[in-house]
Length: 329
Image 1 (cartoon, one colour):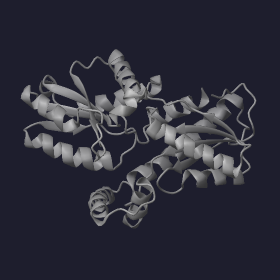
Image 2: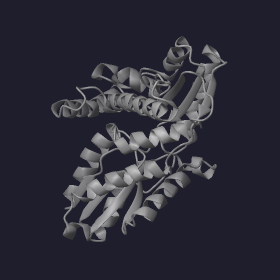
Image 3: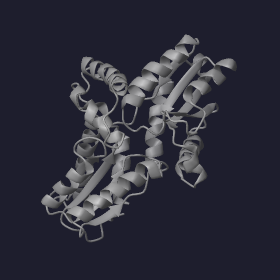
């Protein structure tokens, strides 16, 4: 990617791409409108999603975590701030203490502000001509990374086509990322007694995508499995399953099995304890705080299981270190 012993421009932008989320209840309608291609959501859609976000905003505010703002957007902005500090600290370490900050980290959301286009405009306004782009989805799919990069390319061509853009690879199998995941898994396992761990299964849960994409050669599933293999090479967890969540509501076939199906299967086998690892979700969002923490947890507990979710990486120092290394490699 870049190297400390290679000449670079005086200031390099790092642009983190992410899905985004409403920063308040008032932004939910515009957020959904963006997701469904510019059409306004139906009253039923709006009510359903609003109720979920009401719970999340109420929960996070009560716990003093993020002051009522949407978890994903706020956490991503925190990640950007920490990453910028880490990059510039390393810059001073390797190129001299008299160096001023050489990296400026921006965030571009696909469905909320600041948008990808807005961040590109800000980069150009600050007269930065070199941009390192990192999509915060750990695994590549044409419906995530592919779509984001298409939108980014369109923005750059429109705003300033001379900007030099370097694309960082998806990081789902990076050694430091794997180390950060294992740290969270070990923290989660500590919530079970030694006796409970003898009857425990790990569920690695990732966002589902349409099966036809895999059939067409999309590398998403292959990268997910490679990530799990890397985890197991370091920490040989004996009992685990891969499951999928958040499939679309259309009639199209999506990747399976769904998390509830795996819970059913494990229950029939006499499993009493489950540790769910939200493998594809690096930051807390509606799919971790509501779908997992409320829906799946209740489903498992009604079957008599103890159910624990590992923390997302969020602003974990190991994760920030991983991102800085990915940028600088």
